[in-house]
Image (tube, rainbow, N blue to C red):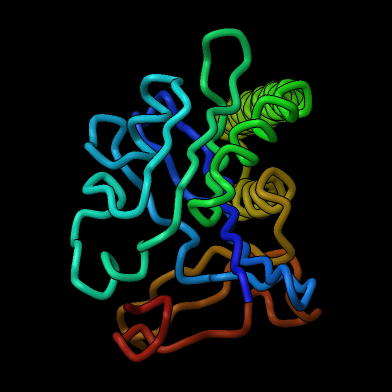
Length: 239
């Protein structure tokens, strides 16, 4: 059965590399598609001598007849023998002068002229693919910008809330308030600001070597002022 190998690879100009994102083998006789996961994720530097990198770098259509040293960095006799009678085509998918992807496929050598004609015929389709890829890239950039902006706004809002809480606690402390009242207000504001269920203040009692729960929110009624934990390293607080 004649096997036609199709690969789609994406170019990354910022990282100056091209990465294989899909690999499919189509059996003409069986009319089936099979994926090759071992091929996914392989990357090449745009400065590499690999034929894929050359296509992405130059934007020129490349044809490799039978064995071509640019097909792999590690040639061996099996690979070279397996290429006999075959032709590889590396087709740039471009938007204006920018290479967005590379489509790699192949045929038997007697089908070369037919394949070259088909590549010419499918150029309008490749142009549409390029537009779709460009739109997808722009969409991802916009989504990332929105996400970054939203995160920045949330971070700023959180910092403003924290500063407001610090200012409130400072004013409360200067008002000759009782220390226990300041502790109660502190744990309440911290829990609200951090959006957590529990918060506590433990007082170390050296004579008994324990930590007393002096103030807290979220704990069972009756524990504040009574519950204690060991002050040694075996407890979380003591450690």
